[in-house]
Length: 135
Image (cartoon, rainbow, N blue to C red; front, side, top):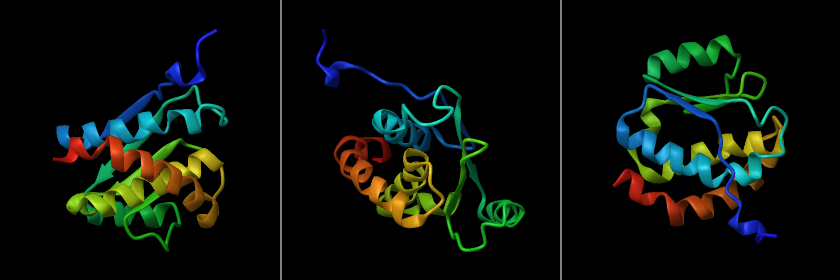
């Protein structure tokens, strides 16, 4: 039997509206998150990340009644993460937001503190592994 760390889990990921550099980074972060997401409901279905210009993001945010969010929100049912293009201005904001949204999927919770606990673990791995993708 193989060592469990030798197993590779992949997420079926679709990224819409990203530059090649953004796509590399988002792919890296979601792939290192795959282990945390593998046993969640519908984990065999695609996860879509949609990057929108900020004014379009605000319109989408209103449509989903996600009034409190500033740069990102998720729909667990649709398996979609919506990101404002403004989030890509600096690495720390991007890292904080995308791991937080993936934390919602990992915990299957709409509660921010649940997502943030999962995001902390993802963030540490992503900071070590994925910074190359944004340089």
